[in-house]
Structure formats: C-alpha cells, structure tokens
Length: 111
Image (cartoon, rainbow, N blue to C red):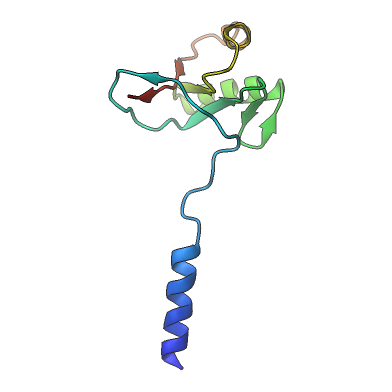
C-alpha cells in the first residue's frame, strides 16, 4: 500500500506545474547583454498589441502596472513581442511618461 502512495506522490510531483506560465506567448527581441534579474512588475505586450498586467488586459493594464511599480518602488519592465510595431510601443511609453518618477525598462533576451 505504501508503494502505491509513494508512486502517486512521485507522479503528482513530476506532473505538477512549478512556475506559472506567462499570460501571453511572446517572441522577445534579443540583445548582446547579460541576463538580468527578473522583474517584480512586468507589462506584457503581445504581437497584436494587447497589453496584459497580471489579470488585467487592455488600456487599464498600463496604469495598473505603473501604479504597482511606483508603490513597490521597483522598475516597470515592458516585455513586448519583437514583431510589435514600434509605434504602438512608443504610444505605451508616452502613456507611462505621465507617471512621475517611474523607472522603465524594456526586456530583451540575450543572444
């Protein structure tokens, strides 16, 4: 009986999801930099320009992410798909510029 319990325990440990998946599938651009520390506050921007912060999507995600970054006193990381139009990214950056004292960083993947 203990063998069955042990096998079930091992099975569930191996099949469990340890890290939550990111809210949108992204293909991030690359950069010749060392990988940095993970951000505590990340705003995701999909290829179709959909913005996501935690469970909030759309235009409200920009303000919510900025406010959370300011409250936590951490940088706001913007993780955008590399196929996202630069005009849309610039529009989001302009919206974020209205939050005084916010530290913005665009996330890239090392080569």
